[in-house]
Length: 138
Length: 150
Picture (cartoon, each protein chain N blue to C red):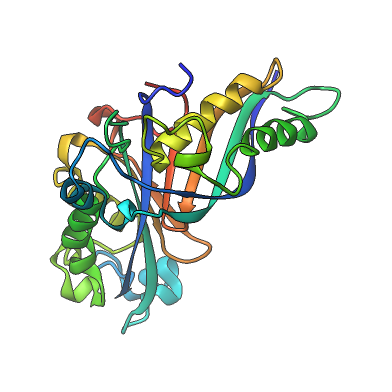
C-alpha cells in the first residue's frame, strides 16, 4: 500500500530557565548566558508532528486529523502556559532545552498514537531562527 | 525510555546575509548565457537576502540538555560564512566564485565545504539556503561522507 507522511502544526506558549543548581552562578552564566536569568523567560513554540503510514484505501487518510489533534493537544495540555521547570514533571532533573523538550514531546506523542500510525518525527521551533528535530533515533 | 536525556537530535539555526551576484559562465557565449540564465545574466548583477539554515546532529548532553553550543555555532558561521559573503558581490568580491557561477546550488555546496571542517566532531548534518521565497537549495554532503539526507 502506498505510504505518505502527514505533518500537522501546533502552537503553545511556555516559560523556562536554563540553570544547573550544582554549578556556580558564574558557570551557569558562562554556559547558558541570559537563558539562566533567575525568573525565566518564555517562547511561542511551534510543534510540527509528522505521522507516516499507509494511505487507507477507503478514507484516503494516513491518520484521522481528529485523532492526531486530540492526541497532540492532550499532550500539550501539560505544557501550555506553564513554566516548564516549575510546573511540569519532566524537567526536575533535566534542563528544558529545545533538544530535551523535543525528545520528551516525541515520546509522549508516540505513546498515545492509535495503532497503525507511526510517529516519523517531530520538529520543535523555539522561535523563527531555531528548531530541533527528533525521530526517535539514538 | 520516557524522559530519557539520550537520543539523536537535529538542531537548526537560521543565519542571514545579503549579497549580489550574476549568473554568467565564461564557458558560454553571450547568447547562451542569456538563454540559460535569462535576466540573472544581466551585466551588473542583482542581489538577494539569503537565509542559511545550518543543521547540526548530535546526542543530547545529559547535563546541559544541549546537542551543540549555540554560541560556538554562531561564531563559526559568522566567521566562515556571514563575514565572507555579507554585503559583497559574490562574483567580484569573494574568491570562491572567481571560477564558479554563484548559483544557489554552488553556494550551498561551497558553504558546506567552508563549514564541514570548522564545525567540530563532523556534526554538520545539512544546509538549506533560501534565496527567495520561492527558491531554496539543500545539501547534506556526498554519500561517501557517510551521511544520509533524512
